Structures are given as structure tokens and as C-alpha cells.
Image 1 (cartoon, rainbow, N blue to C red):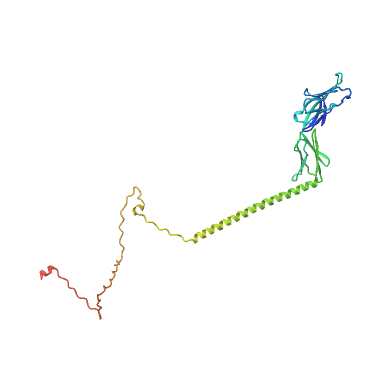
Image 2: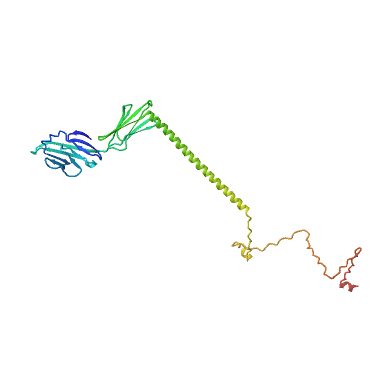
Length: 313
């Protein structure tokens, strides 16, 4: 909790989700105080009177005898103007104070990261309201900025020690853990990791290619076996069925084309081969007379003269 004195009152910073005690600076002696009243945005929230029990409007607030107001579990809508008034037994105002309450979220721890390629150091926070980051190099502040990330690059020697400080009005955190030994370890470790990833990718791709090639070879062998089995089988001859009507099986003539009678084929030149007559075997019971000796001369056949020659003679 931080307090700042302004003309309108005291600015008080409270941490989100935490309790807050509003103490009254310059509170008078308790023996003369008879009445204490707290208001928020001019609305009464708590009051305590001498010889009377504490009166609170809600369970959000508690008040002690010294006038301190406790606000439980701060939320963002708890911000606003708080005012306290202190009176004596005669109703005389002894003290009046105003408090301007503002709420901020506490910070997460700052992280320091290193980029090996260009010697860049970065400091960042993930959570927190309006953080201020400061980067120290060998105990010398080299950069500061309001925001969740700052970076710094240098070109000097490696023997450096870095520190990052993150702060706001309700919180402050420090990271001292990055020196040049750690930087070298990060760089070497990153290079080894990248090499391992590259080798792993290469190994997986190679195994995939080998398995794919093996599958292709197995498919080719199966195809060759199937071809050989088909060749080894005897083809079954199916009888060719002749059409019942030969004329129906002929191709119909093209429309517009006149059918022509079959052309006369010329007779082939050369001697005509007479078909040989088969000799019938002799009938049973008949005797075939075989001639012995030289063959006899054939009898001379006389031609018959025509009728005109007989008349002339």
C-alpha cells in the first residue's frame, strides 16, 4: 500500500483481491474522541460512538477504536473517495481526512530471455497493472520503460550479468538469474535441441520412405505372381454358336447403295485336271480272266458310211 498526498486528499493504492487498512494520520487522543464516521462517495459505510457498539452498513468493512477502516478483499469497483470525520463529546469536529483509493493488480515474476543470434536480452511480465520494467547490466541500469516487455542489445564482451526489476504502486519483484554462463548454456542447449529435432524428422521421413518402398515391392511381387498363375491355367474353349438365320447375321446394306450381283470369276488357265474314277472291287462269285502272254491288238472298228454314200454307190 502506498499513499500520496494531493490537494484533494490522500491517494491510496490497494492490491486487487487483498485486504486494505485505511489508517488515519494525526488521529487525536482516544480519551477525547466520542464519535467516528466513515463515508464512501458521501454515503455512510461505518460509524463508532463512545459507549455504543460498532455500526457497519455491510460486512465489507470493519472499523477499529483508533478509527482505522478495514476493507476486505478489494475489488476494482471499491475504488473511490473515502472520508473520515472525528468528533468529541460536544460534537466538535476534531479531524477530517479524505482518501482517494485506487486499485492495481499485483505483478507476476519478471522473466529474462536470451536470443543467441543477435545478443538480445528481453525482460517481460505476464500479469500485473501498469508495470515498470528496469534492466540492469553489471549493476548498471541500461534500460527502463512502462510496459510488459523491454529488450536490450549490446556488442561487448560476454562476461555480463543481467537483472530485471518489475514494479508498480502495489508490488515489486526482481529476477537476478541470468549471467553469461547461463547464456552460453542456453545457446548450446538450443542448438543441440534443434539438431536433435532435425535428426528426428530426417529419421522419421526415411523410415516412411522405406516402408512405402517395401509396400510397393510387395504389391509388385503379388501382381507378378497373379500373372504367372493366370498364364499357367489352360484356357477353356467355348463353342461358337452359328446363327439360325445366316441372312440375319449379315451386315445390312448401307442406305442409298445398290446391291450388285456377284461378278463372274474367270476360269483359271492351264490343263484341267480330270477327277480319277475309283475302280469298284469285283463282285463276289465272278472270276476275273487274266490274260497271259503279250497283249492282243485291239479290234479295228469300221465306221458306218453315211446314207448319201450308199445311194451314190
